[in-house]
Structure formats: structure tokens, C-alpha cells
Image 1 (tube, one colour):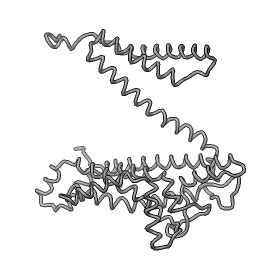
Image 2 (cartoon, helix red, strand yellow):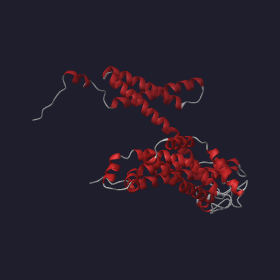
Image 3 (cartoon, helix red, strand yellow):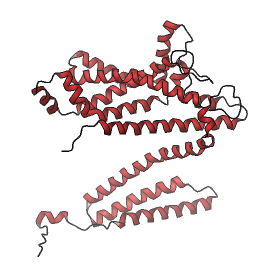
Image 4 (cartoon, one colour):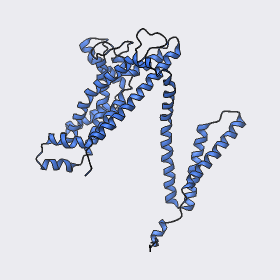
Length: 359
């Protein structure tokens, strides 16, 4: 025999009537149907096009009003506010997803036209019309980004370790301030800095892949520093103290305890930094330039990259124009796929190297 305990007294006020789970969906559907019908009638009366965005927006607003009023009458003001805020948050999420989905659909639909074998195994050397590919731009992007990562990750990670584990006083505050300033530097300024730096040694007009890598590293370092610093601060001090109590030196504690504990977040921050710079165009136009030929040497001659390839193909359209536009869309799709692959790789690394919590 089971016993059922019913709330009494003050607790009974919290156990009032509730709307059924289907009610919000029914209200949402009715609001959208009414809004679509209204906008269809207005479009027919005015002889104009049907506004899908306006109909969805008015329907969403109507849903929020109706569900809030119903919840207030049936469930009380507290639950009504909860439903209202839930609706706002869900609506904000859907609005944020609209441009992402729109960009994805547009790039995929336009980029598949030149997503063929020739595009991936040939360059633009001696190509003036149809055909050609972006192999030289893909190689250039990977080499420049890899070099920028090799420069940025050790510097950024060691800076964050200093700020968290060693930094105290005025020097740490100055470094933090400079990192914050570097975070807001425009990309074109980073390109001009790298170009001016190498022009001092190689003369004006220098264009090399390594110059572009240095420009991208200027943009990457503050992102790596800030993200790694936050991850290192999340490591509980009890882990450090336990290692110190066993006589482990500080550098070994950082290497064997602190970094493995925060490796997942640090890897994610590094991938965010790479995604931040892999699509930069302005600094690479200044520092690496553009070329139609393959170049595997970061320290010699101009080097093409995918963002610059997209820019040059779209802005310098020849005959036929559609061939240049198709190549630009295909390169943009490849760039997005590379970013997705890097993020997937980062998740795998974070899973492999994350500390094991199982017993």
C-alpha cells in the first residue's frame, strides 16, 4: 500500500493549476496561422509580396502575449514570467541561428558548382577563363596558418601561465593591459606592422608567406592568452597544493597537473584563435600578396591563401564571369569545411588528453 503526501499550508500555493504540455505548442501554431493569414490578406489587398519575416515576427509576438496572459490566469504570475522569459530566450536563439543557416545554405548551394577534382588538384597558373583550381591557395592557407599557430601558441600559452602562476604586481597588470589592447587591434594594422617589420630587413615591397604568418600571429596571441588564462584559473588550487605537499616542484606541477586538467579548454581556445585568423584577408593582401602558382616555401616569394583567392576571383572577374564567381564560392566552401575539420580535431584532442575521471 502506497501513501500520497499532499502539500498543505504555504506549500499548497506552489502546487496550483498548470497548463498542459501541448498548450504552448497549440498557442504557437494558432498564433502563426493567424499571423500568416493576416499578412496574406494584407498582401492580397495591397498587391504586394507576402512578408514571411513579418508574419513570423508578429506570430511570435502574439504567442508571447497570449501564453503569458493564459499562464497568469491559470498558473500565477511567477510561472507566467518564467514562460515569457523562456519564449524570449528561445526566440533569441532561433534568430541567432537564422544567419548561420542562411550562410551555410548559400555557400553550399553556390559552391558545389565547382566542387570537382580539377578544383582540388590544380592551380590558376596559365588559366584565364574556365577551369583552374585553388590547390595553391589551400596549401598557402594551411602553411601560413600552421606557421602562425607555431608562433602564437607557445608565446600565448607561456604568457598565460606566467599571469596565472607567477605574475604579481605592476608587470602582470601591464601585460594584461597590453593583451586587452591587442585583442581590439584591427587586422589591417597587424598586417601593416608585419609588413613594416620585414621591410626593415628585406626592403620595401617584400611579400612572403612568413610575413603573413607573423601578421596572423599578432591577432592570435591575445586570443590564446585570454582563453588559456581563463582555463588555467579554473583549475582548483587544491590540486596544486596537493602536488606541492608531495614535494613536486612548481614547474612540474604546472606541466603534469595544471595543464592536463585544463587541456580541453586550452585546445578549444586555440581552435577559436585559428578560426579567428584563418579567414583574414586584409593582412594577407598586404603581407603575402597573391599569385596564380604553387609556392611551398614560406620564406620565398608571394603565397596565395583562400581568403585572398576568394577576394581576387570575385573582384577581378574575367570572361566568362560565372567561372570566377563559381571558383570564389567553391573556395569559400572549402574554407568553411577546413574550419569545421579543425574544430572537430580540437574536440578529439580535448577528449583524448582530458584527465580521466572514472574510478
